[in-house]
Length: 193
Length: 155
Image 1 (cartoon, rainbow over the protein chains, first blue to last red):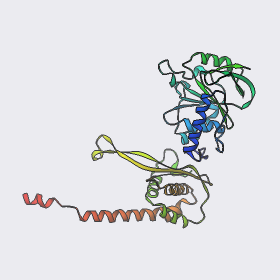
Image 2 (image 1 turned 60 degrees about the horizontal axis):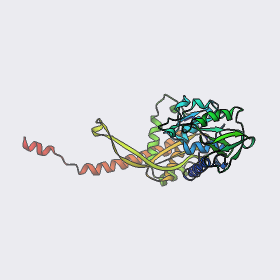
Image 3 (image 1 turned 90 degrees about the vertical axis):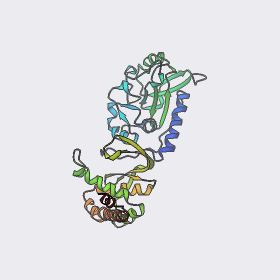
Image 4 (image 1 turned 180 degrees about the vertical axis):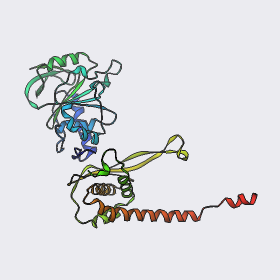
């Protein structure tokens, strides 16, 4: 085993994975709502606590994972703690981890017969409570909800509109920054505010 | 990393000591650890966790593989403050045994301690286990029925 695997995973794997799963579920149900996960987790660079917690919770040997080459330093840690199977082609991945927004077209959007087979993008950004402001609308939101994020590129809203237009196909995003996460399911529409 | 764990080299030695540790009880391991003097601190990379593994067999050692049944296994991974990572997979649900076995596996990889632990812990444990197996085998051998007598009578 590589020397890089020197950090533990969840201290209490069952309960921390359950609470993180619940947070992701709630985040998907209420797009844009912030949830705290991964507090107290010692994480390998360059992953943030929320990113690492989501991966520990969601990824196992049955979910092909595409890892941003910029995050390659965390590869051994993920292989050890998640039993993750890495794929080189993003289109084969069930989960994709990225530190910068990749092209949505690279990821699997699912098929009309099985839209649930699409990829979930776990996007780590600089901050989730400040920066560019967006307005979210769609299922789960009685009235449009605000989202502030630092680290999404300028063309994000246009790229998202193309993804959103594929509904019921499309990629879902879990935004992670520090120990916070927010989700952008494919059903949500985003405008700049 | 010691030479016997470099990629491409055989892992026979480590396989043997991990097997010996996996067969030793938690109490035995704790006593042996107490005799080892100063031991570096360690942290759990993967806390002891129990699960099931499928045991597969082959009839006669050469038939088609079949699932014999599941057995309970506890595994643990620790990392000593010296940077050695030790793993343990032990039968049953004894988390302390798994943790101590993983710690010994980590200590065995430290070139400064490995030979001492091999001589003072692994070899005595292996000898004890061998003696226990020999006793059981001897008792069982005493009940063995010799069929050749009947065959001789018929001839």
